[in-house]
Image 1 (cartoon, one colour):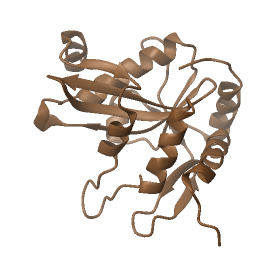
Image 2 (cartoon, one colour):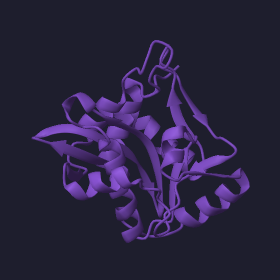
Image 3 (spheres, rainbow, N blue to C red):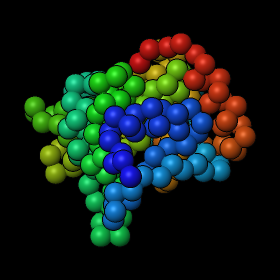
Image 4 (spheres, rainbow, N blue to C red):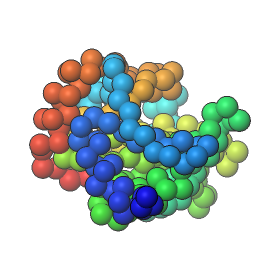
Length: 205
């Protein structure tokens, strides 16, 4: 059987996103699967719909972090690809990392970086197709002064997406972290309709 390469995966991953499926790797054997969920978590992009606490608003306005886009994609995904615990291992396998690097080179995958004192202390990455952005993973480094850095990156991401005409920010599964920022559950049928509209748009990240 032909061994799957990162180059093989690029069109497969893009096609998966177009049909509402996202990739996840198995940390044990490195195999790759595509998944959907119902309901689907999305972050509303309407003005004022991102839920920003007073403390986070102060953090954003303080200028504590320098924010960049697409300046260190490889480092961001490296930081995201770590095991949280022995029972919560990363789904971002080395093969997926290399495929996302190719997606970034092709202009589909993007990152947001947070800096403090010259160090990368937080970030996130995802994939853009038409007017849809599929958020994949985020990280922060509190020990380096990066408390709330990933949340600040998300605030800047939402502002950029809204400004540039994106209409869908996909979060896959909701969790307490994304819910605290305003993520909502959307029935799969509604999500499919909104996804079809979003990817038909011609916008630029």
